[in-house]
Image 1: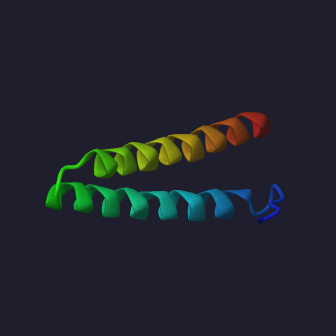
Image 2: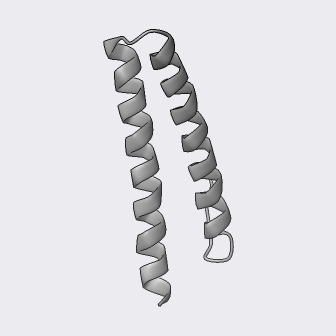
Length: 65
């Protein structure tokens, strides 16, 4: 687990966002090859992770303003 301070929180969230976007791209590729319930679930999970990272970012920015 990474412990983040305010100084590097943007970096950590950026890395999380990049990872989640990569996972979404892979999940969408797998779904385009074969549309299965598990591939659809993987796409939904990746989108949910991106939403969670964006929510964390917005919560953090709100505290600094």
